[in-house]
Amino acid sequence: MANFLLERTVPLPLTEAWRRLTEWPRHAEVVPLTRVRVTTPAPTHEGTRFVARSGLGPLSFDDPMEVTVWQPPGDDDSPGLCRLDKRGRVITGWAEIEVRPGPGGRTRVVWREELRVRFVPGALDGVVERVGRYVFGRAVNRLLRRS
Image (cartoon, rainbow, N blue to C red; front, side, top):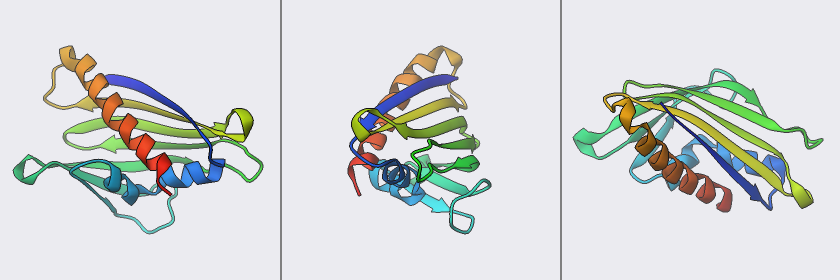
């Protein structure tokens, strides 16, 4: 399994950073060759499920996820935390998205992820970690930049 951590400090209010990171269909706008379909009624809550379909043609796979922790930030600047459990045939693991007050009225974003890719031997976990850090790092940057 590959574990990685991404941290960003952005000039956004907590609630806006949270919104940008947890509007699941927006992820398809920033991750190439990916579509996202939410399979449960809005709004997001514990138990919300969605599927990210990635790839091209026969080389595509589904990455089903479920929100298992949903604690949006409060109006009093209390932190927010979301945990996604990945339950696919190809990718399993989890991701945590946290927003909390940062320096100078900014927001600190922490994205933690544990990925297991079926059919990829453990000896390649370092490669999976580097690729994951790159792909998710770009996605987080783009999500936070776009309103």
